[in-house]
Amino acid sequence: MYNEKPEKLKRTIVFVYNADSGIWSKYLDFAHKIISPSTYSCGLCGLTHGSFLENKAWKEFREAVPHQFIFKYKDSFLKEMKGEGCQELEFPIILEQKENRLDILMYAEELNLIDSTEDLVDILQKKLA
Image (tube, rainbow, N blue to C red; front, side, top):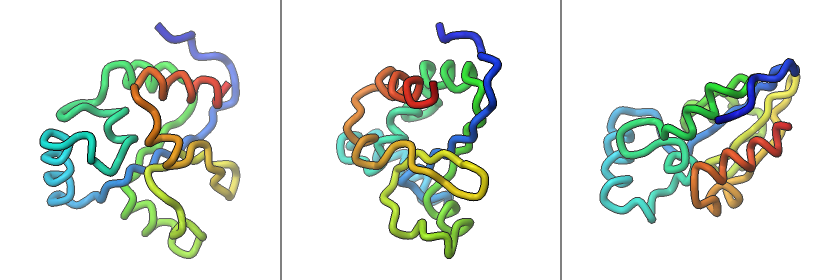
């Protein structure tokens, strides 16, 4: 469905979910996505994953692109980036790692307006072209 992997330099894209990594947090997030998905605080989670598994269209895209995708929970990302000015960021967020810095690829406001996985894929394809 997606183009063959082009012979371009690989980029590193960091996806940071607006969710915490603890087991209790994961159970609460799981329940929240089922009970009240429209009020769930991580639009990115809903675009890349269903209630139980990774979204099929997202997985196909992720596996087809030549870039490295790194996925982080907000708490672990902030712990790793302590002192790097990331505490002010709004989550979810998509960043691109460039040498010793992170550039914002998609802000929370933009991610939270996306209605479908296909729309997310289209936007990312354009931004990563």
